[in-house]
Image 1 (cartoon, rainbow, N blue to C red):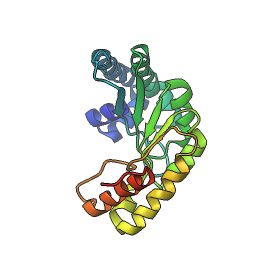
Image 2: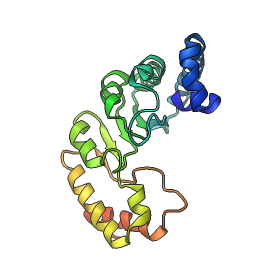
Image 3: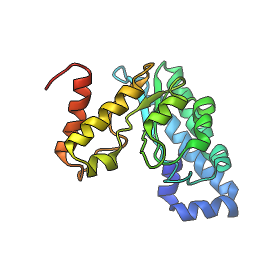
Length: 206
């Protein structure tokens, strides 16, 4: 809901409109949220759907882009509506959301009801800390820092990946992977080093 609203209006205009015309802001988010819930209603009927995932980037390096109170008013109720559709169909819901979300993680887990969270970076919150704090409540996905994947050597990436996975794997509920999308500028050999490290930990080769 947040991403679609910010794409439609531009982030600056959206931030202004919630103060100047909150009735319009509510109508905007309601239209978007209703649409997303309707899409989910159709998709969860597909037999091949294992888990429902969508992206809604809520933060940047140091905070959320909307205040927590505005997220609770305009965004989380519609995320929750989608999650309820997914759960009613007996499926799991995974949220991809970038940025510093510590102030609203309890909302996402306890109110919205997400089952898993993806997108972690060392500059905001290392995945090892996220696993320690919330791993008993939700699945923690990825977290091998993309900046590290870009800038480091294959050897350093293998060692880093093994440290992260060994720590996060304790107690279950963790899936190894990158902290965010593998972009075109990530060196191929560095990406493969991450994959090889996970395979080695799992006793696989090739």
